[in-house]
Image (cartoon, rainbow, N blue to C red):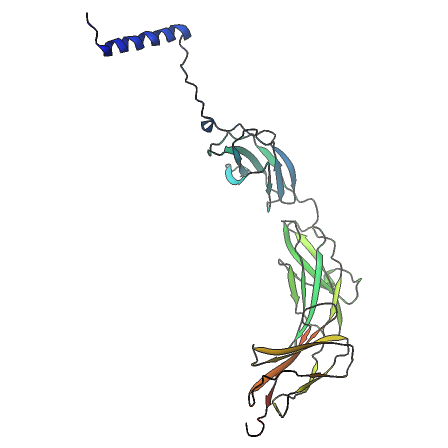
Length: 336
């Protein structure tokens, strides 16, 4: 009987296969794969709850030893809901914030390698970020009393608290530095880190302010250190008078306040913008006349210009009082 080359190759393959079956019995034949990129990472180990309080959860785990680890997927479920992928991190810790105090949060993680293959997830850990601690004392409170063209207010600003569960800040006002924070001194609240007090105020009165931080569980911080400021009157604008026509470059004359202050005189080409000159003067003159020469030679004859006075109190760099604008015209000379 003649055998073709195909039959001989098939017979050889059959004998080899039978030999393998006889040698290894009925076990499945496996072919080793040396491509590590096709092997998913090991399951991360050591997942634990590092912190859970006041709406914040911090998780921690051991770094995977796999050389091609890209990072970790974070899964979370709330109470009896399903797990959802909420984040990815290259770190071996995770910070979850703005959570509910009364909810049960379950977390598990998986490792992801550079080939985007993902490990099996870890067992889950439970976190209950209940409301335990009152917020930190608000810091760096600043104040700016304002009399801006007759509108009185006090503007406050502070550094936002670092806690993620802050609901609001309460603002309190008193007449002395040691005033009591209470319902009678309460003037308002805000979810921002600034506040403008527009409740009835008086010129020449020193007002003191404190603020407290309130979290979503209504725990209240220690009051901030007090700050204070005085609402200044508007400086009297004596010369040039409003609507006046003058022969020469003006000498600005203002009536000083009953307090030491910094004065800034501004000249503009219109009532809204176009500042062409300004001069700042520190003066301790009280209820007196302050004269300031105008050194600017670019005025056009017959054109209206506008001037005003800003004042600054010693405890801040922001404007305290702002006058209205007065206009003046430089009269033409020698027929021009």
